[in-house]
Image (cartoon, rainbow, N blue to C red; front, side, top):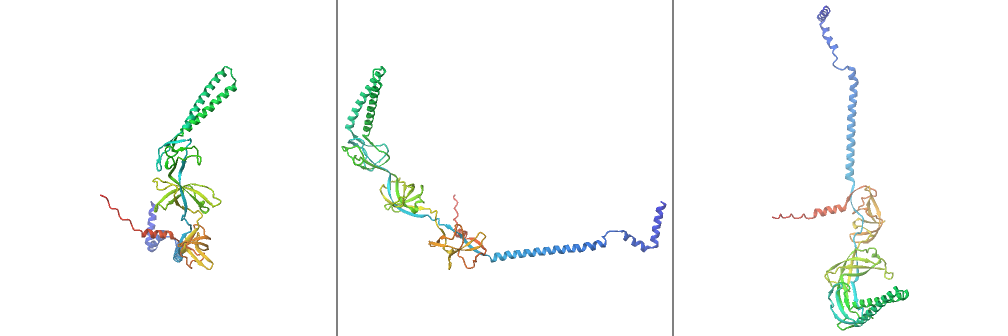
Length: 417
């Protein structure tokens, strides 16, 4: 307590004696601001950093402006061209050949046994079904031969049976028994043959079709056989479908295949096209004519076509080796010859020399110098220098857009009540 009071007393006394000194003493003890040496060091560093940041921002802004300016100049100065794709001519080739209609089935019916016509059941123009009775033939000679054969077969059978019993009793030899047994088998075979011949007394239709000829009448004597040796009874055709045979030249033979569609043109049926289908090809050329025979089948449900008619067969053949064609507006004729302007994969111009073939009006045939699917510039000008970079626009898309915009909009549907 004594020291504390003494200190207080000394403090008060010092304040009384030198008032001014006591006022400055608290300022030296308070340290609220950094010293002057720290401010002198960090101030220039902060200023330099700020200037560097401003400089970087300015440089970046300048570079960005130059880049935008360069892109703008490139966009405004780069040439734009319309291109089309070089393709092979996809138009099918038309081939018209003469042909003769033939029935799918056609035959002349002959008798298998001699006799005379007892009756006939059908006449020309009649439609018949397979197995239908056409006529009956009386065969008296065959009937007598059949009766004689039956008697011989019965005798041979009785003889064979007796010899079988004698063989069991060991009275006759095995050789004698075998001879009689085979004689019976021969007699039986002859009997079956005559029975089948007698069965041909009934003339039956071999297939479904139409009778085109009747060459007999009741009482007509007929002779078994074919051709000049036999008597023709009936002629029949099956005219649905019909066959048309054509001979295709060697240049078009490779395009023929089964299933290829064709149109049949007949002069007697103006304005009518009959659909046909290739069903068979010979697969080889005739060395004399260098042609290949091709069969085309034509449905004939309504019977408008007849076997033996003459007509023309029109094919639309795809050409796998068709030439490359490009629009006529893409060609440029220079002193070096005909050329086209193509665009490379990196959109650069290239002048290509070509060899021109046939002129189709709006298109020209390219024989050599141009590959398929190449980009060809439409309406090229002298501004297209070799190697210059261009902006590519598809001419096909432009035409499609024009067509879609010019097409009239459909009328609104009226709501039904």
